[in-house]
Length: 216
Ligand SMILES: C[S@@+](CC[C@H](N)C(=O)[O-])C[C@H]1O[C@@H](n2cnc3c(N)ncnc32)[C@H](O)[C@@H]1O
Image 1: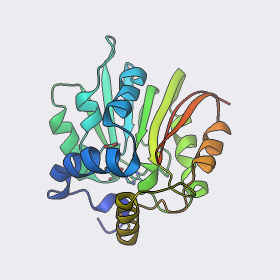
Image 2 (image 1 turned 30 degrees about the horizontal axis):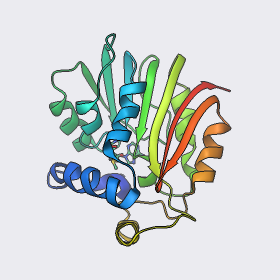
Image 3 (image 1 turned 90 degrees about the horizontal axis):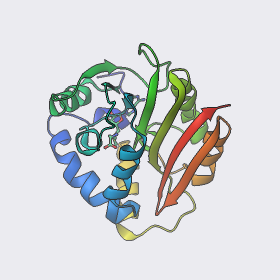
Image 4 (image 1 turned 60 degrees about the vertical axis):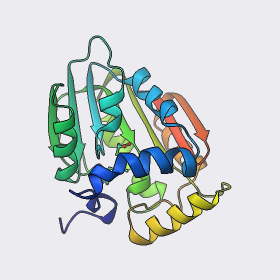
């Protein structure tokens, strides 16, 4: 685990079982200001027959989303093998493939995907948006014609934050579990719009969500 940056290192035997309760059910609605239902709706809307999920942690969204009728295969990719193993076990009813890989490098996957989910990933990764945006290039390299890249990331820079958000942002950035104090909605929007012709990018509370199609 020595070469895994701290934004991925925290996902282990103790933290993964707590993730849904603490992060998804508390931080997402009460600190970041978006309901889990709204986030899940993106999965319901965007998941295609061949889906790649990058940065899976517990696989909550994949476990709870409505799958399209033509759903065939899900590939789980994460820098931390604890996460892919945890999510794969949870999704044992589905045809899943596990891949350990760094989203900052070309994805070590085979073939093309109808949908690529980048949920709550970028805000964990070190650096500014300019350091992280290569993830979109790596996504485009394996996106099938007509495919969609969708995701969500906490972009707090310049936005009004409640007390809980301030506490979590300060504590988690100090520990390296989050790396997003320099992330702004505008920078993330620009990074997506530079690469895709058709986009739907929204800001809900501190969370930027997107659906992006037709790479330029
Ligand atoms: C906050 S969790 C998000 C989990 C899930 N997508 C969700 O929305 O609930 C971030 C996940 O991204 C992974 N991760 C962090 N940096 C990564 C990187 N550079 N490449 C691939 N995965 C990474 C972490 O190990 C962790 O499983």
